[in-house]
Image (tube, one colour):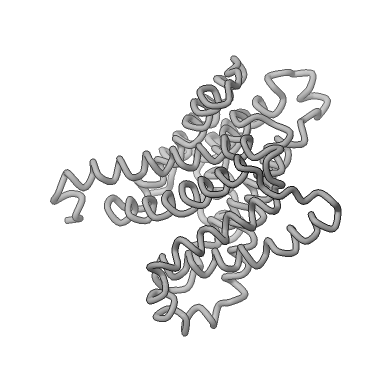
Length: 302
């Protein structure tokens, strides 16, 4: 029997941790919008991962020392994962925030599990059932609805905002990162997270240099510094630790379901904090995305 079965209180603890995780990740869409005009996107990415490393270095040193003999044999993999899942995803995420709403960002982000299903099939030939395929299609319909603002004319004319298109690419990259996690080296979770965070920081340096060369670098205002602290502490560090602990308590399958709350929280926070308008097409898209993920979960092979 699992610990969660023997101790029902573990379920409650896991549910709380995972709900806070989804809230932090949903809040990142709001942070992205708050950063507009307060700090340039690439500098935010660099400071985000620098902040994570400074925070995590307090208790991660012994894990890195223990795991280093294994990690150094997989440096190319570590670099690719940090660049793909952390740097590239967040760079596109924060650039997208300049030309789309936090509600759109949150809902499109909900498509990541679908890209994971597709990526797992392409990479490992993981079976995809008919029900999963239906769920993928429904989720993609939701993304199309939010990207086109529910307009058939915009959809038929392939008129999609730059921010929404960037978010779709970002989610595609993160889906690839998630698929790659299946091949991660056998090291501690904290040691691996620290290593790919360091890789993400290094990968962000050429981007922030390019931003400076192009004259687009903006040093943080007071609000910008607050956003840096929030994104480093909440979606980057706290959410990751809570998610790891939630998986330990109830397993990855059950824990993964809570990711579906991210677009819900992002939409609620965007309305409450930013005063964004929640339209009918947002509701329709949210139903499609969440419904598609639910159908996909139901259709998993035994």
